[in-house]
Amino acid sequence: MPIYLDNNATTPMDPRVLEAMLPYFVEKFGNAASRNHSFGWVAEEAVDYAREQVAKLINADPKEIIFTSGATEADNLAIKGVYEMYSSKGNHIITATTEHKAVLDTCKHIEKTGGKVTYLDVKADGLIDLAELEAAITPQTILIAIMYGNNEIGVIQPVREISAIARKHGVLFFTDATQAVGKIPVDVQKDGIDLMAFSGHKMYGPKGVGVLYVRRKNPRVKVTAQMDGGGHERGMRSGTLNVPGIVGLGKACELCMNEMESEAKRLSVMRDRLESALMELEEAYVNGNREHRLPHVANISFKYVEGEGLMMGFNKDIAVSSGSACTSASLEPSYVLKALGLGDDLAHSSLRFGLGRFTTDEQIDYTINAVRSTVLKLREMSPLWEMYKEGVDIDSIEWAHH
Amino acid sequence: MAYSDKVIDHYQNPKNVGTLDKSKNNVGTGLVGAPECGDVMRLQIEVDEESGLIKDAKFKTFGCGSAIASSSLATEWLKGKTVDQALAIDNMDIVEELNLPPVKIHCSVLAEDAIKAAINDYRVKNGMPELELEKKPH
Image (tube, rainbow over all chains, first blue to last red; front, side, top):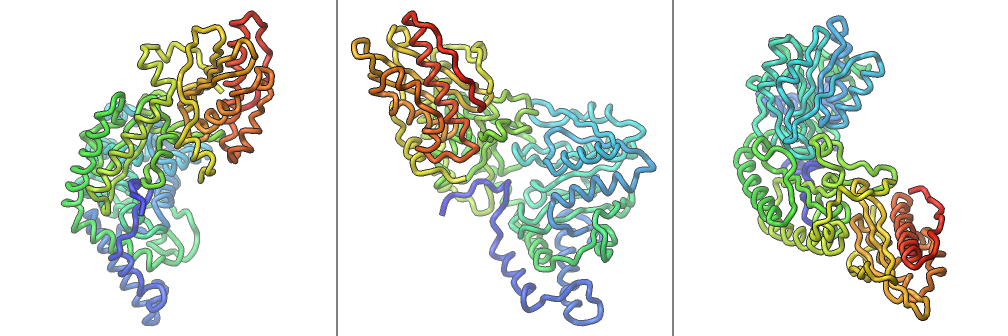
């Protein structure tokens, strides 16, 4: 089996989650909305139990959990739903340039329909500037949408400070916590979160199921439904509930609740070991704030080698992700890395390592060796490395951009 | 997207990686691409002054596997050709030989550009006029 270090893209499902789900496909197949027979009751009971498991992980009330098809849907529902519900109050949303596309493109959509969106730049370490955030608030501002932990660099935003600013100005705070929930403690009360999106498949649960947390008290938040139908999920998200998926998500949350603390420690030790070993290479740079960071993520640029070419050196055995997209359709490297102020060359030279529950020490050892030797081999082949070694200023060359 | 076996072979065992002495009159150097675009190729030819044949070719490439394979293949093809024969190498020959998918065609264009840039450098060094080159879209 190849080594899987792309756990920010998706995680393998925990076998214990699968076990919990299995009865709900064939045997207990009922529709949770069928109120008048035992098939429906069994399904409803399972959903209620899962709702409690999910709520417990984030310290919410089960009634505040809205099941969706995933985090993308939850992002859409939160942003569009707030925009429509609070249109009498204002039409301005504040977000950041390093958000996931599900947030950014939803904001772009809102701009097309007449809304106003401020995209905050981030500092070189990936964190937003709180003073800039506060200064961006206008009387028209209805929502601040800032993610919890970044998917590419793992940087954790100062969520409590952000929510305090939002509260002070009477603005709702939504966070996409897809990479954070189940990995680090996320507490909607202590963190002051009004709406929060996350999904099952990033926390060893199934794909196709996610959550939008919607606060019910202090303040009571409402979102306008984005799908019309049977009025499921307190009218906010119609559609027959994905019972097996929801059961799996509940189980995944329970496992994270029990194991997250020790797991985060184990992963951060392995991540740090991987990172410091790779940083011994010349001209290697960690992207993003190293202190405020998810425990399982490392994003490193190896200057003078190209990310996709680098991955090819070991992608038979090791799955990682690169900030470089070398296709004629998109020569643009990662917009997140560029938002940190990285030049395109460094952004093209980056690898993202996402460790997970099933990552072992042996796998990290293997990865260190494979990445190291490939970087060294490709640098021997790199004209840029040769120029760097000869002291040529690469920026002074007039490159023919194509 | 999976790479073709030929791309993988050139990537794992690149042919003619290295550097020729660019101060020599019979060496032509082409440096094309840009770090910002994620690929830079340097391709060099050394021409035998008596026979007019390319006796050696070397490359160094910063880029994806297809870019590395395209330049490696180009150096293989260059050796033993006359400069005029080398000019006739078309990027689509590289695409065909390496089974490059459409999104990687720009790698082959870059290799063709590198060949032509190296030849032009050689020509200018030896008192010949620079060739006007057709610009292919990347």
